[in-house]
Image (cartoon, rainbow, N blue to C red):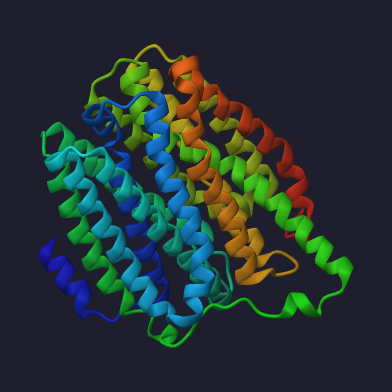
Length: 405
């Protein structure tokens, strides 16, 4: 591993490789703490309401970061942000590990997760907007594969969480190891974005030059895209936050099995995102989203009703596969469909997606004490059905890319 890192550091890496690495380390950081949610829940003895409040800290921080980054990016070059923000994530993980393993201080954990959310929200917008810029430069859709690297990072993070829990390694050491890895990857990644040394992604004034009809149509497109992406992102975020906890508290499995269920989810999501481009080329955007959405709906139902680890694990994988393409295809539509909405639209749709992904699932915690786990997760099925109903309308807007889109 050390030799591989040293070799990568010596090589001149491309702009796209840098963005791939940034997406990967963002996913790695997220899955590192999400994979240990059942441990965090046990350490602090959270009720459903308390766990929901804990997750809300990340949500509020992320939404704050999303709102702040357009202003920050006007003054700080993109290259510097794409290096410093991941290091900020690493620092927050160390703080959270100290709160869990050393001080057992819930207040410190709340603060750490809030700061993590702010940093993650800023990085999310920058890496998605940067990915859209790279997509336009290379002239083909790469957004699904970029999010595939995010999922690959979550798979790596979930795998490390499963392994460290099984080996009874304290959270602080686990998080510290991952933080060092994130810092190294961030340093390597920033070497490939020299073309952005002085570039700031500030929205253009094109919207102001358009007529009222064009502006209304664009706003309608953004609304539909945002709602669809929000629904699919909600089901993805619910899995991130609740699969491990539900496996332990709802199904009665061991902590290691709970982490394994989360790992199966992100593995299936990673696979779906890396093959998603081929599916879209063959089936069209609409059919791909509808088929995978139905698979995800069946997966949610199987996860809730499964009576043994094998059925619950199969449900986790189907849930992950079904949730894999909603967010990246939403980004791709915003960046590349007929009106080429550009970085501003990518930022807006990303805010919809992450707002739902991080803001919606904590709501489940507020109803867990009444509905209990896993029954409370039927909320995910209802939201997913709503998003599926919107999909045909969303994929008809703009210039049709193919007969099925």
